[in-house]
Image (tube, rainbow, N blue to C red; front, side, top):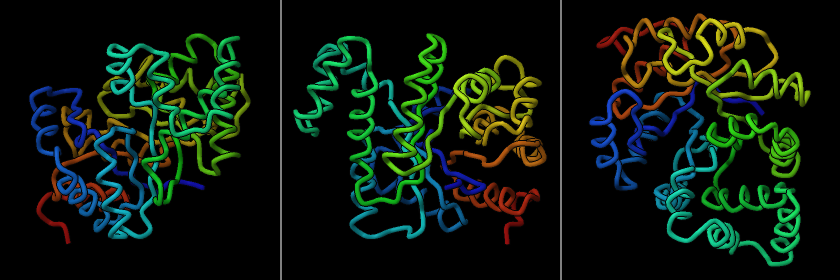
Length: 294
């Protein structure tokens, strides 16, 4: 299963803006209610977007319940990205790691939890990982899921400590057991390609990484990322294409649209005009000027 050319992201709903913290705070307040999030998803859907990629934040439970109940957006696919680090970090401070793991596995039968915890005690965390993925996906019940992505805070850390078997097991579990497309977010696309393609030997894994004309958050360098995207070993989703609004939108989008190896583009926006303009530009491959959207 592949992704559409354009994907709606969710940074705006969570109040995330890497270039402007004031704007981030304002966005978080703006999207405190489910209806406000559903409205923006609706704008993107009407513009032609058929993929929504999101982190597994608790605020999406009422959003997805409403979408399922009213059968909104037929043909729209959902791709959860996990783990949502802040949710687990805050819980661990309050209750400790063991209690957090156990509480998150309360939806799973003891017959499955006990063996997984026993394996974890001897250093094999694959069983716990699989159960936590299943629990995180409960918020997507009744929705068509396109893929499951591991966020960079976990993926890049596992690469750093050389946990290749766990990465391989995650990929296989999502692909074979869940039957959806596995993928990874990374802050270092060239290294991710080396690990996944050359060392683990995965065939064209999906990667989501920063890709923009200014080299914003592109590691180790933008030149290396451009070459890595173009090498043909991975399927690639470009993110931070506008650098959280810090770059000129028209030139930024033109740069990404004409780059080699960009299979999909993910962006978030709280503006209906910007969503319509950017989606039209991405789907047609031609820049749409502000104010002349047909």
